[in-house]
Image 1 (cartoon, rainbow, N blue to C red):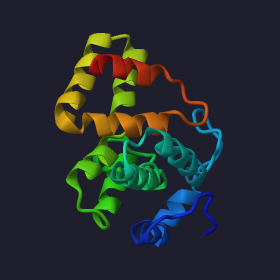
Image 2: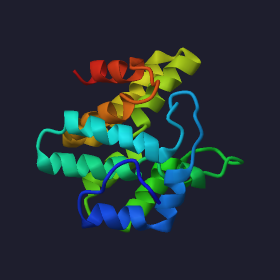
Image 3: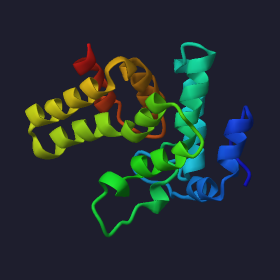
Length: 176
């Protein structure tokens, strides 16, 4: 598979050589928030943002790993079932990543990468901003000391395509 970005080490090369990862990287058509279409094209944009948001080389390497897998398993979501728990693309990504990574903090960020957005979405859909904030604060509590890393990844992921910056700004306000 021809990728729109280079891999930088053996671990990244092994991940992108996995047939399940490759199928997921090819998945996707242009859509709201993702005019780039394929997951691989989205990953390429996130990786460019990682270079701007990483605080050092170790952080950059970890952010790159999150970027490589975070959305790659959307193709495995069963559209006939609720997109929660084991049928959410982020949990599917975490399960895949567990075969390559032994960093529990990074695995949690992969699993939770859309939770801040989902919290904001709860407020937008229902108008119940108190519940949305409760959900976001539960995420903040769960992340604990990992919150700064999560925020760096959220910024890298959210500042792509045609995504609104409103959910990111809302969540950042809650964390300050």
